[in-house]
Image 1: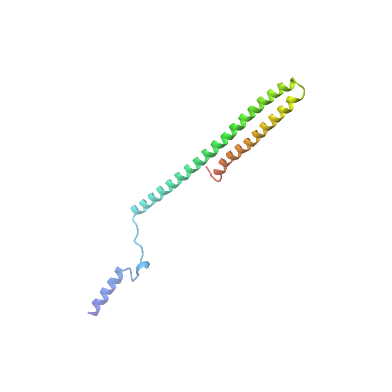
Image 2: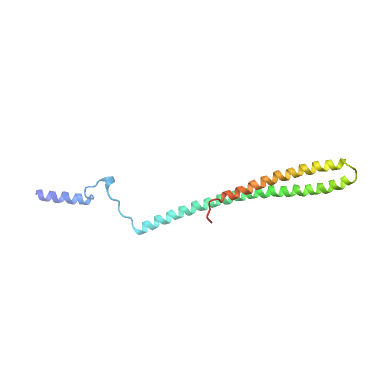
Length: 138
């Protein structure tokens, strides 16, 4: 009867994975369908993350592009005003001798200083857009 007990105990050991227990057990192989399902889920997660990233980049470009365009338009507007002031000042300087000339130079100088400041601000904002795409191969 001892032989029967030994055979039964060997069968039990084979069923348990040759004596391996718990964490040491070999995991069951996954089917192709399970692997394809996992691949699909991973691809779906990647696509959702990439879409969210691209939406964030587009929002960033829109915000800074809009601000850069606004500053650029203000710079062009003030440049136009400076040219009008220069024209009016030049006409006024021809009438008397010195007074209107200094007034015209002051006005044109201040407006041109604003043009320079706003132009630099516009360039800075538009430059940030380029930095958002640094490192892209596309």
